Image (cartoon, rainbow, N blue to C red):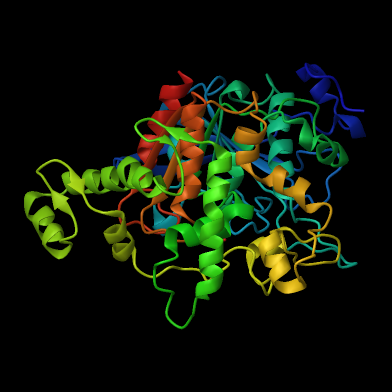
Length: 475
Ligand code: DHB
């Protein structure tokens, strides 16, 4: 049995018996010094405590993945800082729904994409506690050929890591009521799912199985960059959005498949009953207008407004589809699509007929590496009477934030959301983030959504603003 919540640190020092393994030991750390350049380009010398937690669950399946690191700033530029009540950035490093391990790291992952300071590094330099959890992922297979990291393993692990922190409230540095999750792409999907599904009872059996701490897994705020989510509707959404875009060179999109999927998107979108101010009910008919006016045009406007007069004039001359009235960019959805150019993925983009996509592997089980998770692709391959495997619908619910926001509105969800996406990112449909933002806004949550103009997959162009946002929402 797990020790009760509220276990004191005196007991923590006596830990060692099996049931006490989830008690955090504040005295176990290495002290490290790192130079971190903030988003404004200023370098800071940060002294921090680096804690390694061998496992955040009592019955780990694989500690290579089910472990976490905690970084706690103690001196920044020579001044002592007390992070005991600071917000906690909970930064997953999942990509491609692959396994992600932090077990061999000897310090905070301070460098992000392109050599810039990572979100973790920026957060540490801002005085926040940084937690970096590992998680199982889709390709893990044991010696008997059984897949043990497919859905819902990654979200179960991230929840277990949150529970570990909350279980250790008072022992673990930082304010466990101010956990802010972040992640990119599949990691953005998992971050949004973690935010949407806080304390949902659906995960209980899975959490119990791995010996997760008996504590809340709800988080305070959620950052999600280019979330690759709502997977079972992503093929339809993709064709609705990018169906008219040319395929990447060398590939051919089946027009019948694309057309069938695109037509199926309308009924799905209608079933969500989304609303947006100034647009009313969102449907396949006005969705383009919603995306255009709410995200794409403001994105271009922000981009152009930040350019020098000569650079702006040059950009506008090279992109005559954009009208610029001196302060606002306008253009049509069709011209925007043409501007984006080639689509990245074939059709179907996610539940490929030949099971070759990462998502088919995500829904693998037992010794089966990959399965269909949409009726459309399954029936295309196996005939009109084919049925999805019995466990698929429940696994889809466990992996989809929209379930927790639409089908069963989850009171335990986070109420602060930061959603970011590049306008040229064709890894998934622009409706995915758009629907997420629309639904959360309609629910009354605090939602900060922005698209980076002309940016591709994985972009993060305002990391400093995210760090400021954490302070603003958790103040
Ligand atoms: C990621 C990208 C994809 O296109 C996808 O289908 C799944 C995951 C990623 O970058 O994590």
